[in-house]
Length: 177
Length: 435
Image (cartoon, chains in turn blue, cyan):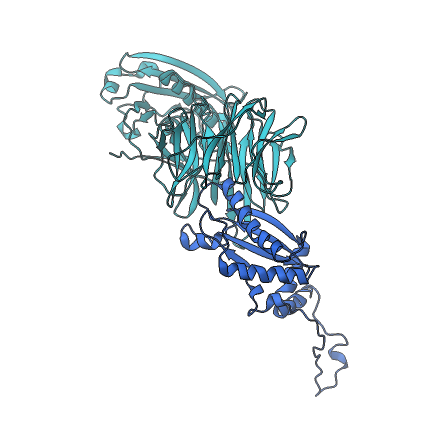
């Protein structure tokens, strides 16, 4: 789980990557540059420059890429994937086929209506519908893990359709990319 | 015709640490047939106030059952605390057929002695009387025992007030972090004790038949697992963590088997786990979601939810010695969505969740006739659970965006909201009688 989190931070791109580096500075230690102010001649001011070039980009992070869509929504008590989502799921499958070290957790969720245990089954059925498509489109068996949370982890609070439609979903969570 | 009776009880303390807890009893269904009774505040002669108002707890218990309509305090013609002080003629005018009076006195060596009498107003005679010792912590419990004694004397059926409930709460912190708790409390939701705290969801608490253990689902390892925990010691063990879903535990009446739902073979199926040997038997086989098993009280059937017919409905599977003894038969035909069935203690009815459109309500179905009676008027109900005497059903619902527990008489006569916990409250399970 920790590993997953770390990778998620990496995935979320250069902006957050920089933020991450900043966080590594321990607040209790004074933030001083090596070879500090004392050596500076009056009238001159030295400064550091950023030259490191870590590449943290990924097609997963291209907002124009179909891969940026990693949440799929469903009708009530249904696990039917829409035609539009099928194409996007196919892109994810191709990406995974091309990146054998990548893996994905396919999380299934339900809205709060009906019974919690049935919804746990429904969340799994939705995640498996996505999983099945991805396996058909070239994802290797073993690259994926299906977990259902039923209605236990809603994405949106609220007790009407505006929240429910956001909660009947499958989320793809990548790691190893 | 709707009668609304509102009693506000202010209890001095409850174990959640709040200084004052208000129990709001709202009885919203018709009170026809409820027996008028009068519960007079008990006498107390001690120097400091009692930690609990015993008569108020008794009165709330009796009202909650739907079988009794306690007189409001301002309608009591007198406040006798001894039998000799009772002027029966004055009580006949109130319509109350039964009168409860009592006294609490300090006991030598600490604690209290609670004495009460149940009087028959039309016959001007005492029906029964008891003295019960109690420590400060036991006063509420003694009040529930008094309610049980009165209930049994007047209805001829065993009371279930001195029992427990378990439920799950979810609280969101200021930082958005969620905390899930598994709680055990008295049947009126007082005396809450937390037996598990987790940052991940907890689901489906189920009491063992002896009331000593709870089985439940916890996501503490990032996915579902089934655990069994001793209530008194907190000692617990994980009994199922297979690939996929591990959920919906249900104890067999003899306590030897746990029915549960596993999707390790690809989709949710009902299994029976023999606890002593850890032997696992799959008892359903269908592409559908088969889940939420519940044993009949005689152990000779399991009901479960399945959408094998297209939508969730209740099915019954004959069982023998923890093994299937036939094929499943569909039980529910009324309503588009029926799920989460629980047997009444007499085995003749099922409490279930019944859905139509966007409304999900609690119903009781007579198994023999198939007649389904909807008991609630709300829209997001869940998780019905019978009291061990079969007279009441506790369930969860949503009120103004918050999960709360409500109790309803099994014949639909009285509703009460139990609103003491913080955060969202859900998935109540009523304990059996303790053995």
